[in-house]
Image 1: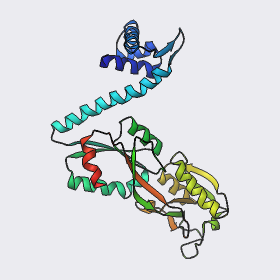
Image 2 (image 1 turned 180 degrees about the horizontal axis):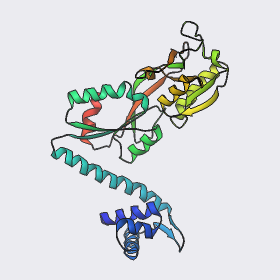
Image 3 (image 1 turned 60 degrees about the horizontal axis):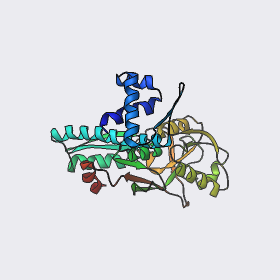
Image 4 (image 1 turned 180 degrees about the vertical axis):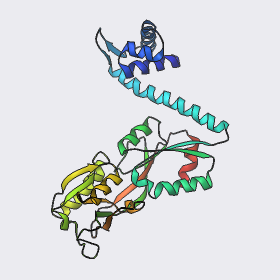
Length: 288
């Protein structure tokens, strides 16, 4: 089995169409079919179910696709790391993060990196919890900042910031810090919340804060972006509940009021894959 077999297989598995895969690979369709049959013979399994109209992955083919994606991506990552090492760098650290990490945790880490590991470059991408986990398992990320209750057993997770919750209201709202006692003062208001796609665990925490105050919130809008939520609040379209640390870095006509007397808190955690071979990751973990 050679690398070309895996590249050809990946193209057919993604396109599920031999003609399109052949055009993408710049080879003939019969030649591609021969390569796939050869791979199936080498592995001793059928990878595709095919007739004149359809091509589908078998269960074995579906499993192989995930492994091939990992292998090919790892090879690309290795090539990039080699170029950085050749130029005198330690390597590149690929970091995924939720928007809330960009206010304090991520800038602190990058400042430490610049000071203590200046030969490490970084690639940063704002991603949802689920996408970070998926990309890390496929070796497309080295480090992630998430809000999750747990992660798959092949990943490690460690909390880096414990945070309280705050209510966000327009600056001209009649309830201010001096007369804010409980979330139930807002039970008749519309709520603007982070979507459960952002973090289902986090969404349930918000719902439990409201339930503990004796009501179910009237959810009018949802978003995965803090700035969008704050703009909607600023324009009088509702109120929001967010981690208190999100108040940093925005200059908007909204007021943040920490919610008193609740047991709920939120944690921002860092995740990584222990078997990750990136030398940059091994140098960065102690800084975290």
